[in-house]
Amino acid sequence: MSTAEITVLGGGIFGLATAWSCLKRGARVRVQDTRKIGDGASGGLVGALAPHTPDNWNEKKQFQFESLVMAEPYWAEIAELSGIPSSYARHGRVQPIASARAKALADDRAIKANSVWAGFAQWDVVPAQGAWMPQTDTGFVIHDTLSARLHPRQAVTALATAFQRRGGELLEGSTTEPQGLVVHATGYEGLSSLSQTMRHPVGNGVKGQALLLRHDARHAPQLFADGLHIVPHHDGTVAVGSTSERDWTDAYATDAQLDDIHTRALAAFPVLQGAQILERWAGVRPRAVSRAPIMDHYPDRPGHFVANGGFKIGFGIAPKLGEVMADLILEGTANIPESFRLRSFLP
Image 1 (cartoon, rainbow, N blue to C red):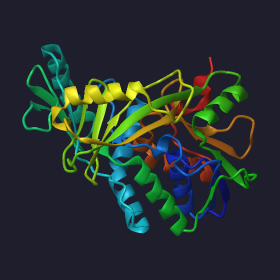
Image 2 (cartoon, rainbow, N blue to C red):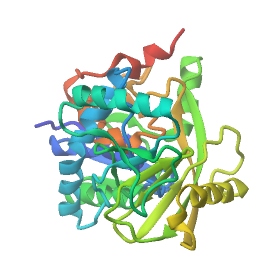
Image 3 (tube, rainbow, N blue to C red):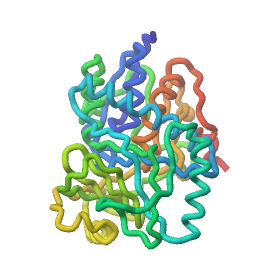
Image 4 (cartoon, one colour):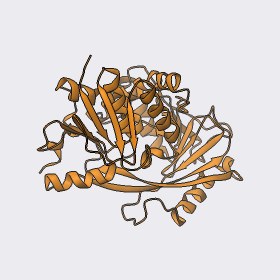
């Protein structure tokens, strides 16, 4: 058990997951955020824990797969300790197949999934049947059983509560000088600072907008079509998202781009016609230039570390990221994929 003192800067999913793993190993851990816990992209609505395609397998896909395997017991423990459901469920995902060529590719990926997913989950090509199905020209869809879902905002609240109940300290609206070892999990602003430190582009912020609708499909799989994630939650709502905006001025404003998301969702999934809009949300996700997360020592700052760049897979890789960051911080060694290291960003 460790007796290290750790300050985690940033109360999003990467910061909380790192803090949680370090706390469970005996470290004294404080999480402090200049705003509120989960105030940024981690306080969103969608929560699609969807894997990458099983072909062209690489270290990033393997890392994500291993984390998705860890997810169910991870979130079950947090729900039990906090008393707050994360909405986690592994009900899979359905995607339409638009052409004969796409079907051939999907059939090939089914064979590859059987190998790289090691029998834990399947990628199947099946007939499109039932009301909870996307529109498809071929009559076939992909149904994978690896995809899971959670409600990001509820999951962050549950994790923060479990962290406190186990003895961790949370400070909101804090600019207190960090003590001990320091983890920088500071979202897109942190990527900007890191780029300045390294004198080389590391990443930026990509804004996303999403909707929350009143429609009860809590036991159904999530849907993906026309670039949209349709994710049912346990509370009788469905999240729809999201945009990917490189150019933006107001991180929290929604606009006509979200109206377009709604229109496209209704066209792809007519079952949502008439569903009440409960919430319109916007936030900025930290995206590394490589699209891979960053896990490493902070350059030229002994005792400082970086966990950032979750972008669209932050919640999906959080369970494993927390453990690997704890290895790095507390043990000094970690099995981090080379593409996640900062040196991979340099020319």
